[in-house]
Length: 168
Image 1 (cartoon, rainbow, N blue to C red):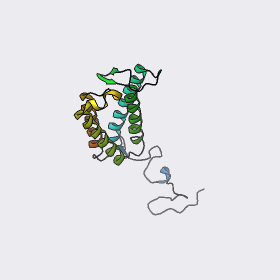
Image 2: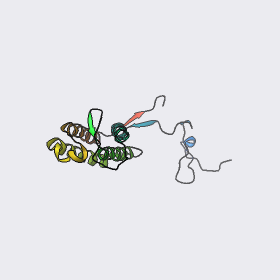
Image 3: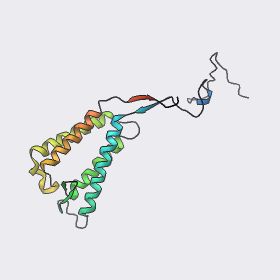
Image 4: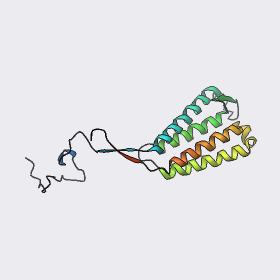
């Protein structure tokens, strides 16, 4: 028999830092929390990260890495041109966004990354030919990069919602 003291509400404190769910009165042991977290930033981050990762991998598959020339060949993926270097950058940024969006979401880091992506997009939009030899950038790259960065930064300002679990 458990010899832990019981307070008037029926709660029996456990040893150590953990609270056993079945020790709390009125709570069934199957549930750990009556509320769940819905984080729009996490969903936006996952969406952008997966999209960049897929586009980058498809671009690498189409360009190949046989001769290690990072500026050629130039291929088209979802209507945008890409080189092996741009494909590698898309993969790295996609992985960064996925890592920052998983678990405890790093809203400040994603906000800064989104702002940086938007700034790079503005540069590509204003001066697309400056990086054309290595990245095959065009004005459309700048437009999509600005939209991606602004979307990521804007989502980082929306606080996560706490939603009551169904049946709780």
